[in-house]
Each structure stands twice: as C-alpha cells, then as structure tokens.
Image 1 (cartoon, rainbow, N blue to C red):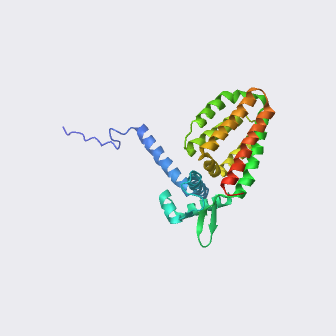
Image 2: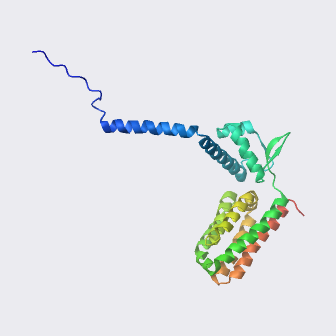
Length: 255
C-alpha cells in the first residue's frame, strides 16, 4: 500500500497565526513611521526640535562660562563637538543673537556677547519690580515658605568659593519665595529675565563677601514675613536686587 505524502505546512512550528499578525502589525508600524518621517510637516518639526536642542546646549555653555563672554565661536569645531551640521548650529546662533547672548560680525563670525553695564542697568530694575509684584500678590500666605527659605539660606551661607552652587541656591531661594504667586505669566517673565542675567549672577557669587550680604538680605525678608509685615518684606526684597545692581555696576567698571 503506497504511503500518502502529506503536504508541508507553510507555517513553521514556531510561528502561530497570532505571531504572524504581530509581525505584520510591526512591519506596518515601521512603514507608517517611515511615511511620517517623509512628510514635510514632520521634517520641519524634527528640524525645529534639533535647532532648539542645539540652542539650549550652546546657551548652557554660555551661562556656565564654558564659552566665556567675548570669546569667538568657531562654528566648525562647535558643530563637531555637538555632533551636528553647521546649518542647525547657525540657526541656533542666530536665535541666541536675537536674545542678546551672541553677536555676529561679517569678518569675525559669531562670538559670545560680552558682559555690559547697559544690560545690568536695564535688567535688574525690571527684575526688582517683577519680583516685588509677585511677592505682594501672594499676600500673607508667603509666611508659609519661611521654614524652607531659612533652610536654603543656611545652605547658601555655608557655600565657600563655589559660585555655581551659590547661584543654584540663590535661585532656589527666590523660586520658593515666589512659588505661590497666582500669576503664571508673571513668573514666566521672571524666569526668562533671570536667564538673561545668569552670567552676572555667577560673577556676583564668586565673591564670598557678596554671598554673605545676600544671606543677610534674605534673612531680613524672612523675618519680615514671619512678623506678618508684607510691605516690609517687599522692601527688603527690592533692596536685595538694588544692592546686586549697584555692586555689579562697580564690578563692571562703572565709576
């Protein structure tokens, strides 16, 4: 009797119909992703995201002092360090120029904007006014931040020669003080302007005597809050910014 030959199955023992469905779904997903990447709007979005990433990285180097004030920016070298082409780097640099962090010259190319008396004179009175407005809008609720403000201020007092740490603690102190402000747009304005003056704050925090002065000024704000004297607290906060302004003008060479 002849043996009946069975037709081989197309599916291997390890591939079930469900697995075939998963595989097909995965392939379809990759094809969709590929088509999405080819869409003009997707390419534009990716380009904008890359430009913003490059901008933030370059800005971080400027604010940290890795790219010092007045230093020339060599595009080819910086692009290689960041692992990008010169196109997104140039776009990011033009954005930073519009924000005042970078300058461009036909002969020299891009350079980091130097520290300037004018920038300090223009920025610090605005910050003084905005922070005073934010603190006043919180009202008596601001007293609830006093314990945390004291703790941060104690940490700031212990900073010795570490300008980066001092700057971080000083920013945190002001952030905690104003965190309950109900006006989010006002807080956004303060944040953006503080980014502008960050290089000047680093210069200020290099001097241990000035750090001690800030600690004392912060303490007077806290004491006023705990006594329920909001107006006095606002005045002391304004004095904190006024002192920084006057000190920086001297450091930058204004008589």
